[in-house]
Length: 250
Image (cartoon, rainbow, N blue to C red; front, side, top):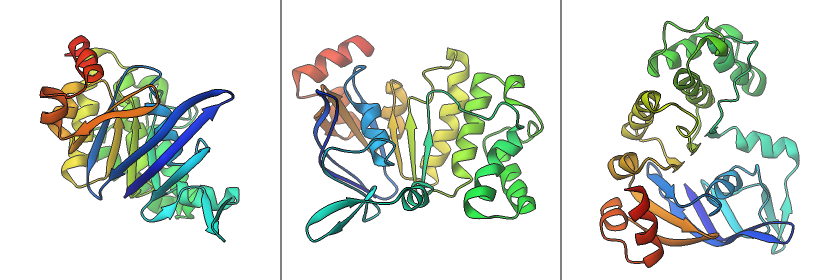
């Protein structure tokens, strides 16, 4: 589903990604671990072309992300085409980014109406089903300010699912939540994994990575230091940098 080959990204003179090569199979869950500033979130944003890469190649479901290839060269797609392809990739951020003036139901139904042209009644019916799925079936009329952080994040997940994405990206989805609210969000993500959703998750929730991930990737200083099954990376890391990181978070 995701194929990254030597992906590089810099901001000015600072190279944040220094040649990331990574595969994510269809239906797999990949968790990205690492210290702050290691490039995890930047890489996630490159997958749906919220950040333009400066080198390498990045494809989702066999299509280059943000570019087309012609004559051996990459040409950036028009914004309209980028938006169309991006609609197939759901993303959930640290902050919930809900429209404060719209109800939970309206937040979920809006994109399918505007982007996909779905009739509003049908979009609302689907939105209600998604609210039921994330355990908020009775909060459709609530505005974001009336919801807890965990509830807002579950609405944000439902909003991403409303576009029927082929891939879900999660950028530290529980880091802004109070500890007692984390579990409900992780439960929704576990359900998605059980349903076969392809997911790339930047997280500090080691227990979640151990339980749900097919592959754990440890990143530091813009490179993949180590990757493999959770038991291998978390319980028997091979690299000293991985060992040092895990000794502080486990």
